[in-house]
Image 1 (cartoon, one colour):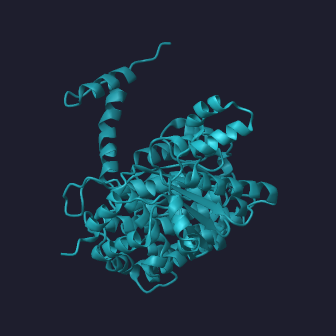
Image 2 (image 1 turned 180 degrees about the vertical axis):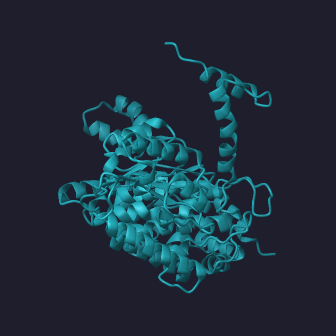
Length: 536
């Protein structure tokens, strides 16, 4: 009987004898064959422990898992979030159609956003002192913060003059206090983003902002000049003091980590303008079309998912590094952590049965800074950590010399992971520096680098709204593909909800200096200690 794709993948891994060097030696055209293009993004996946047989088997498994049908279900509004009985229609947020009810609602929301953006940027939104709004502070957390914050930072070079956009997320009061030190109450507008309008961190910061305005002389009846809400709880937002026309919608069919394309992206639109925001949507839409229409062997999100599945399920890989070689993409790893780990961090499959392996840990930072901290572990550590290098082809500043230095560092790091340095090479290198043969042999063991470490290199044509939109959607679809292959629901996050449920009673305990007998002994001890008055 013919082995299943999973059995075949296990066999391939068990009998894997090819080093990365050997794969290139045996196929001089490997770099061309293992290369994909789409939506202004190129993917070099040649530096992976993959051959044609492994790719064909991964494709066979994807078809066995009915990935083609799953992709269609995503785009046509079928239930793909079974534990909450919902579709996941974030792709409708960037559709230019009004064929469905969701797309019609999106179009209406975009028109509302455009009106707000135009009013603010043309200095026609006065604060309580009749001065126009010049500063916007977005208050949210998680999906209501990470995406907009990342995009605004990435597109700082196209931000509009005369408007500053800040972000506050942490319930630590230092976050909002430090932010407001640079703001004037009479010219500051707050966007409060919370689906329930009850999120602990968000509402704590919103109430602080409200009190800050009142203490600055803003009358309660004038607070609406300084507050916008993005929420599904209209009544709660209005009771807070926000006018109905300043409340933008949030929908159940859009998860928080997929929501930057929606009204949650209002700070993006204010920062870069509505035309650029529409280009961001267009980039996401282009990647949607690529994901939906391209055969799997030419499909960038699917290929990235295959690679991660291969390593996580058969090579016992526990983490992956995301290394953008672009300072303006420095917040991308944090954004992708939520997108990937909140989606794939599950311990049961769709049927509720326990699984052994699901998502892996994502981490990273911008190059070249990471080279001088954790790259040592990547090169000589004992853990296998696949890497996504992300480079931007066109210079992001007028400093061409430094852009070429940046790109050379990116390419050389992937080259070093591939080739390493043999002990013999290290000995010869040391001897050429005048080191004795005996000492060179001793030192060479410390200088030798195994190499044979896998990586992808993604090249964005340029860092602009269009290509950034495509990059974000690419990773969204990679995560969805992995969810299908792992047979888990990537759209719920019950683990996040547990912490929210527990924090309320503990807050009361800290405030009152009381503990509950049902708490574990450690929690009781922590609450007693942290509720004590500090007399130091």
